[in-house]
Length: 187
Figure 1 (tube, helix red, strand yellow):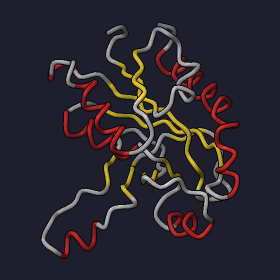
Figure 2 (cartoon, rainbow, N blue to C red):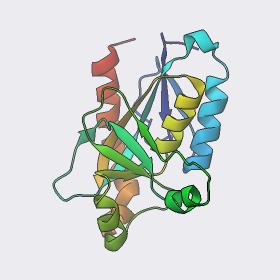
Figure 3 (cartoon, rainbow, N blue to C red):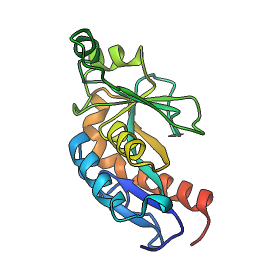
């Protein structure tokens, strides 16, 4: 494991395509289950006293027209779990993870690829961005005692433009890799 204490986590190889080779990278696969399992598996390799900072990079859909660019969410919520119903049945559910040092934005994570305006607008009442892995990464890190940072680049506006996501990934990957290099320096 190279690199002093940083583990870069991405859902797809395309989103991590420009991350310098000096970083340890885990590609989880798409969705919450894949992300939670991959992050847990990766963190299990570290002694509990030397957990790395997990930096989850990736694309996100903007839930508001004025959002674009790079975000470091301060909170991430699990948007597609029936939290209220489960709580009313006596089962506590943690559906929000606070992230230290964020920019004040809120990321909503769910297993649905959001490209419908009505779904987007409903989510916009609770969040700024939407993705498919952030909550799972942050939750696994919290459970295992690893610090976590979410870094998301807007690739679309969670509407019809989301269907062009594959064509936007490389541009986002370049911005994300640049952020990593500027933040952690050449390694």
